[in-house]
Image 1 (cartoon, helix red, strand yellow):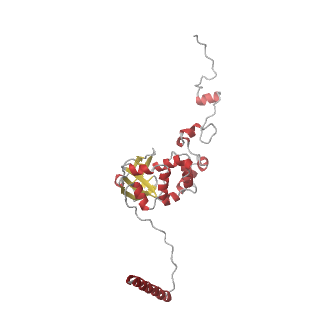
Image 2 (tube, rainbow, N blue to C red; image 1 turned 45 degrees about the vertical axis):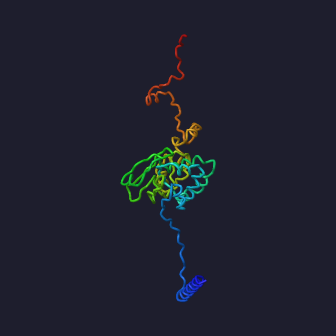
Length: 265
């Protein structure tokens, strides 16, 4: 009862003080303050640490959808480059929804495993230099510690060396995209640097703006469907056997069309 009276009295004093301030000066408009994400603190394994932070809900959902959650919980000595929710939201419109569809689970898994290294790599190992490290996906990521902020494949490591019980978590501000996933780089390449490079290279601008991926970066299954005339295929027509072409290219080296003496049994 005494505590109730104290709280009531305190509330009354606060209201009276607020009224006095309102009479003495007009209320200033309150600016909206964007929430600032706090630092990530190690809290158990990599998955537990990500969950406790509250900044990786999209990453955790994607890991669940590709059956990778248990991998990041049970395997030791891992390094995870963890994109924040803001990093996933910065993907081109519709790209995240496309990746999260069940039929694209294999592509999403390749993207996620491109963020994972099967050994511990802390910031001291890249400080002052550049190194490439192979990921679980198969390709290597480029680590750059030569500047003020460490980078991985052009993404900033905004917080490094969160030491979970089974590995190291580095917070990154962009989703890392492996180059061997057909269509992924083209749909995600929206920054000005890519646009300038495409415009500067007139020989490839038409195919780049059309979203065509070089044949070497396509899967074997996709390459098997290519044929002459496709944008990805460079095919040379036959060279006519004329005196001019012989002077320029030499004699034909093929035996096609030439008769050969018959051989006995």
